Every structure is written in C-alpha cells, then in structure tokens.
Length: 160
Image (cartoon, rainbow, N blue to C red; front, side, top):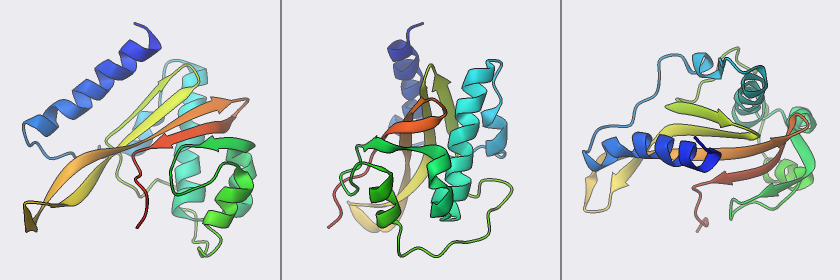
C-alpha cells in the first residue's frame, strides 16, 4: 500500500463513523499508540507524543528546539512559519508541570515514512440546535526530518 492510499484508507476508517453519527472517542491508553514494529516509525511517533506532552500541553517553550526545526513550515492559518514564530505564538502561556502521560484524548496515531498523523475527538456545538453538541475528528499531521518536525498541518480555520 502506498503512503497516500494508507492515509486515505485510514482516514476513511476514522471518518466512517461520522456518517453514522457515532461519537468519536479516545483510546484508553494513548501511549500504546506509540508502539510500532518499525523502530523509525516508533521514534517518529514518540517525538510527536512528547511534543504534545512537553510543548502543547505543558507549554515548555524552552524545549521546542528539541522537537521543531528552526524553519519548520506551518500550515495553520493562525500561526506563522518557524520556531521563533511558534515561541511567540505561545509567549503568554505559563509553563505547567510535564505529565508523564499525555492528557489530551487521542483517537488514533498513524505513522508512515516521515509522516505522523494524530487524530483526536473534537466536541462542537450543533449549528442547527445550539443546545446540543456533537463530536468530530480533529487532526494534526507532521513531517519529520532528522528527528525534528519540519512541517505541520491541522484542521484549524482563521481565528475571528
């Protein structure tokens, strides 16, 4: 199976429940998703798992150089390219203790070649009935080179 067909197949499996209105749920142990029979893929998944724990959850920007290349490409419309821009984006965040395990709920983590995709449940307000909520899948996709993130995609839309 090629890289593209694996991602399409995986995305189809993850999205299929959405058409049937099945709730998107997290796995009980996100750390188990890091395990892989291929040592390179496991290392890439571990890198992203720890990036989530140390940078995105605990906000330890002093560790960002360990995970992100200085000139990484950012496809989020609310953030600029590069490590300095990321540090500026999170400049007003107060660092928290780094938890031994990821707190964020994760539904799936897929690695292929130099790419790692993380899928997670998102709860949103139903536009047809503001008193109701529904779940959908959010994602982050990372391209890794020489042990650091060089490119990032997600489902973010422009902030108002």
